[in-house]
Length: 178
Image 1: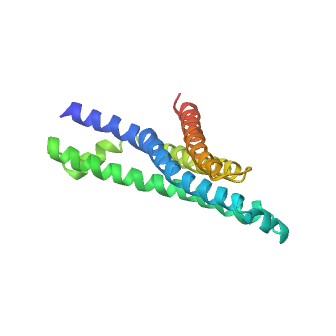
Image 2: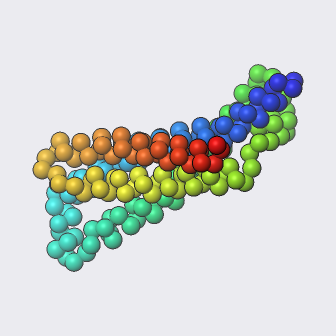
């Protein structure tokens, strides 16, 4: 029983502070970056961004600002949902495999997780969302002479966005825990 408690404690720390936030960031980026880059790329390709400029609207004010706010706020919410779902799955698995009670599982799983861990997760998620939004805007609003270039922007936004998420998580995790 002692090994199970230690295993749950280590699993809780790693899952809540590192693994689930990283995977949530990847899944969020794959879906949202593709959609944002496609929408912006299509707007660029069909001259809708040029039309905004002709009307005196700065595209960054009209398109970038809500994108940045949306992704910066949504990424922590998605991460929280991922942590909750992973915790429920871990509790169910622990009960199924070892018969541990929910209270016993919660005491062991969250024993090493503290407020500092949650602040680091929040910082990683918010910064990742911010950088992914900037990446999508930059790639989506670049020159688009064909539909293939819009597709290339979508693919690039996914790859670069995931790279940014990985870099942010690696740097902040290293800074917080080493």
